[in-house]
Structure formats: structure tokens, C-alpha cells
Amino acid sequence: MSSPATLLEISHGCSLRALNSFGLPATAGTLVHIRSDADVRRVLDHPALGIAPKLVLGGGSNLVLTRDPQAVVLQVEVMGRHLVETRDDAWIVEFGAGESWHGAVAWTLDQGWPGLENLALIPGTVGGAPVQNIGAYGIELADRFESLDAVDLVTGRSVTLNARACAFGYRDSVFKQTGFGGLAGKSLVTRVRLRLPRPWQPVRAYLDIERRMAETGNLAPDARTVFDWVCAIRRAKLPDPALLGNAGSFFKNPVVSAEQCRDIIGRDPHLVHYPLADGRFKLAAGWLIDACGWRGKRVGGAAVYERQALVLVNQGNATGAEVLTLARAIQESVYGRFGIRLEPEPVVV
Ligand code: EPU
Image (cartoon, rainbow, N blue to C red; front, side, top):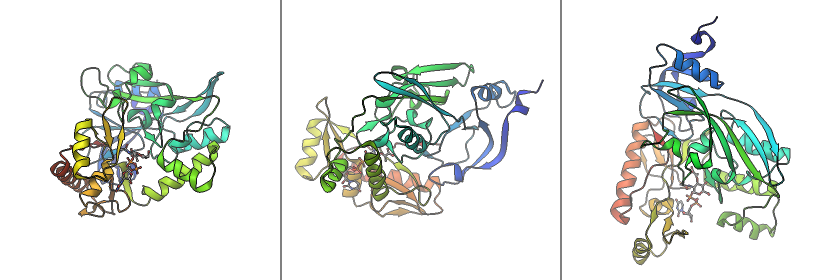
């Protein structure tokens, strides 16, 4: 019988530069390609790998690497996509966690199962989507989520989690939480099932989409049109990581009390703010950063994107330390002017 290690594909001294969308330099001492739940168990059964700390890597699109990971890197490459079930009220489709997110959106649309079009062109993998509950243009992953399979990185047991167990929040889930019951670093997502509601209804209540409807006079766009609009809006606003390294929005949009919102508007009437159901307000972090004059500013090779101040970019040879220095300077200046602490969105290693 083969030993667990002989069945695994393991690389040593592996550059991670091409494996993180920021294009930051770092090297994995050991990187294991994970293609199934069984591969995870093989890692756990391995005498050396089993006891080492683990870093799960999907598309690397929400990651800031500031140093070489002091952990075995588990690169998730579980593939596959298929229709699981056709219900009266939904199509249920399943994807391997290693599938590209945008590829999944385009494929469902091609199959005639719309519902993910507002989430087009988000970088990363399907497995990363629930981890940070990706969202854009009026939808978040949680709105289309059915369940997922994950492997416990201590016991090797495969489990299925529903939406409740995933504890989705704004760019948050149980997989990012470190406290009691949190699964950060403890679990590897292998498959995700999505629920695409029938009949399909467009999600249009978002300023950028409403603007397109007004411009084109098309008030009842089909799913393909929404997909094309979202791709065009993103291409105009956000840098393509293949051309300019980045991790999307670097900070979450902060939520403040009605009183604090009123206080800021008293001094800055143009503040971009959105009311929430609980009476509080979500503020546009990009606007706050922009108002502090950060657009185009840089630290070494790290810079604030010219067209969207919420996005930090790698101008070619940035280090993770430069990205963090820039991020901290932005946090300090936004706090100094508005009294708001911006919280980073990506995971920092
Ligand atoms: N704004 C400025 N200056 C800037 C940037 C933004 O004034 O430099 C203003 C814009 O004019 C707009 C407002 O801020 O009025 C909000 O900007 P935008 O519509 O571009 O959206 P966002 O709040 O910056 C969020 C998500 C994005 C998502 C878009 C569209 C977060 C942290 N970011 O960005 O998600 O694509 O809405 O739904 O919630 C990501 O998470 O990586 C991401 C890209």
C-alpha cells in the first residue's frame, strides 16, 4: 500500500508571488496540492505535515503576504461543477472549491441558471467566496448559498455546513472568526452548493446598475445584460489583478451610529452614507480615504489606486510590509479626521 505522502503532490520552496492576487513576494517552505477530502486526511496522517501549522490558500485574492508563511500551505484545487437538483423554486448547483468564481458565474449563466450575474468578475475561487461572504451590486454570497462541505483540519472529518452554521456577516463568516466556535485556520472548504432562485428576478437596486438602466433605457434587463453591465462597471472602477496586483477593497465600509453620521455630515456634507435597517449608517470607506487626499499616494511599490481610493495596488515590486505601512497611514489619517477606525478586509499573514 502507498504511504499517504506518496499519493500527495508536494512542492518545496515554492514562490507564492503568482498565487496571490496582490503579487506580493513570499515563499512556501512546503506547499501541498489538495484535490480531494482524502488529500486533506493524507496531510493530517503524515508524520511531519500532520503536526505542522496549516495555511489554506484558495485564489489568494484576499490575502496580504508580509512574510514567508510559517505553515504548510494547502493549495485548494478541488474541481468539478454540476447541477445537483432542480426544485420548483431553485436550481441547486455544486462547485469544487478550487473552481474560479467568475468561471462559475459565467457557466451557470451559459447553462440557463441565472442568479449570480451581479457577482461577475470577482477574483478568487468558489471556496473563498463563503469565507469572506463576497458581495457586490446588491447581492452577497449568503443570498445564493445552500450549503458547503469542509474538512476539519484537526480530526480530518468531512462536515456539511448550512448558512446558519457559516454565520455569514458583512464580508465575514465563521471561517474568519478566531474566537470560541470560530473556524479560522481550522477548516478547509472543499465543495460549495449554491441556490439560484426560480423564477429569476433581476437585482437592480444599486446606484451603478440604476445608472445603466437610465443610460440605456432598458428597465427590464435580462441576466446576460446585468452580467455585461457588472463586468463593464467593475472594469471601469477596479484594477485587473492580472495587470496591477490588488486584493479588491482593502477596508470594509464602516458602520456608525445615526448620531456619529449626523456629526460627520455637519462638517462634511458630501459624506457618502447608506441607511441600515437597524437605524445605523454604513459609510463609503473609499469616500473617507479619498477625502483625506490618499488617491495616487504611495509607499515604495504600494499605492492607493487612482480611480478607487478603497483599493491598494502593487505597482510592480511592492512588499507586504509596504502595503501594511500604507494601510496603517490611511487608517491613522481617517481616524484623525473622522474618528473612524477602518478595518482591513483581507487576511494578513
Ligand atoms: N468613492 C469616492 N472616492 C473613491 C472611492 C469611492 O468618493 O475613491 C465613493 C463613490 O463615489 C461611491 C461610494 O464611495 O459613492 C462607494 O463606492 P463604490 O460604489 O465603488 O463601492 P464601495 O463601497 O467602494 C463596495 C464593495 C465592493 C463592491 C462594490 C459594489 C466593500 C468593502 N466593497 O465597494 O467589493 O464591488 O461595493 O457593490 O464593501 C471587495 O470587497 O473587494 C469589493 C470590491
